[in-house]
Image (cartoon, rainbow, N blue to C red; front, side):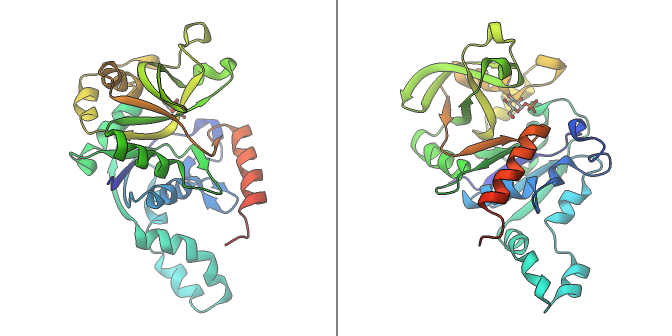
Length: 276
Ligand code: G1P
């Protein structure tokens, strides 16, 4: 059973300036719910109730979001507006939130390593909340991955096919089919130019990682863009046959880009808003 999930939420969100000038990008709402709450709900649904937030300066709003707002509770207690707080109250009750600050933005690998004190020696999930994953009529993507972990006990990355024109935005995997929709990864490359991409299977922001990843990251030199890349650390596990790439059931929206954000907003409004 995987009980912990790590949320790297220290990034700047420059693509959403000026909205993200004084507000964390993870607090941008898709309709009426912040992006990070979608990710936390997905983790809790998968049984990962311990949510480890790797935050940074200017991110206090995230910590406040997962705490009781005493004044607000007091103000609307007994009023018709109380129902608006129900969803987040459930999340706060079910989840346990821990935080550590990433002091320098040295890459996703570095962010994960910064979370080590909150995770310890156990397998854990990772959610990049920019990637909104929804599976309306079935289990969430992390739940699907947790079930796979029980079967295979190794690191798992969520992947989807993307057009080759966009492949240089992603970590890319190649390997051998384990069964339909599941690949035993042998190669992983971070943001390759399309001529060098080993496939069109792109990693999206859901991972299950075994805890040996921390020692591997410690030994991983900076890679693409001079950052310590999780993809490079995962290559070490992949070389030993210990990474699976999973083509999940459900939809994924790239909410780190404006078009993806708008698409997600439209989809959530049409399919979720106003429903129980
Ligand atoms: C990160 C990872 C990349 C992955 C992507 C998914 O990149 O480094 O491997 O494909 O998330 O969204 P970022 O988008 O943070 O640059």
